[in-house]
Image 1 (tube, rainbow, N blue to C red):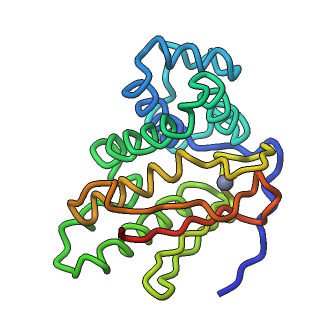
Image 2: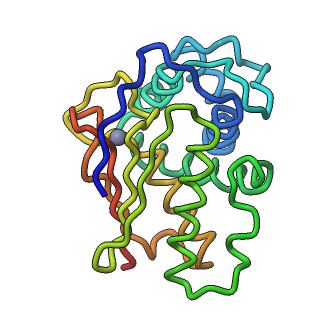
Length: 212
Ligand SMILES: [Zn+2]
């Protein structure tokens, strides 16, 4: 299946519930002071002590969500990549507990499916969740010769950003924790790499997921 790249308007809105999920992850990993610091440096001080509601309204822009990702990388310096992956994992865990219905993932891990199909089912659940709640969301999931390929044509983590390296470390963490959720294994049992990134000028952000 091939898809046309999605043109996301510079001022595209983003969903409160997904920002909230990220803020909970940031708070777990960086603490409240760290959270407040990156909210301030990304121009999102309106959310300090005042997180967005857990709903599907839009009180934030996609590019503000991307700025927050960039601010965390600046704040944590050389540790930024690992820190963002940890935040992505923490966000997914919080989302599963508090937003399973929103994210369309309720019950998937409990299904009596072989592990490989559960891994794919979780990715399809994430795909559906994102495409249901984000107007311009477009995600594709393929199983290619034992590699799960997850492609986001409308990634918001790097919206309007520019980088010479893949920038969506938060996404790598989220997908890793999704694999943990699907299999009960450790996130280190999976090798996840971002092979294309919109921040590098590619038409999509693509992640390849392999079992080690
Ligand atoms: Zn990317």
